[in-house]
Image (cartoon, rainbow, N blue to C red; front, side, top):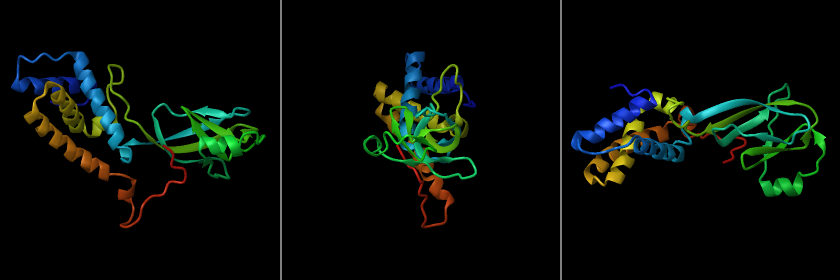
Length: 213
């Protein structure tokens, strides 16, 4: 069967589990949990994968020193003004921001930090400024309302084997656990190598200007 949505993924996981044990009882809540655990592993292991690169055009509003991060934000790769000057906005740690950049007055923001889920700028903007962010995103979690995402579209097999791995861990079926774990691991290994550095000439490595986790 084709796995292209949250519903078809749950159906595929359930049918796989019932192949060896037709008496097994698996609830919809359990299926959702197996998929959630798979997504948590994806977020840990696929941070460098190109499918999770994202960008955003942001407005740093006048007289507002903070700006909410994108909801699926994981790590900033680069952040810069998007006007004619197009200069980078530099990251500093929260302690350095507090000691060196608090109270700088108003002007064109040139420094930022991240506190919780917000960016904080210095100096405070004296006008609206447009900015561009390239960042690593998290996997958009599947649900009944969010039925697909880029990973499911490109690699449904990873979702299948990754979810089954967590199912067999709970069921305590060691043989099946080893089988699906090996298949999931092979896909993870391939995707971990498919990152921004795979686009560069041999021996070189990307160096983002503002890498912040």
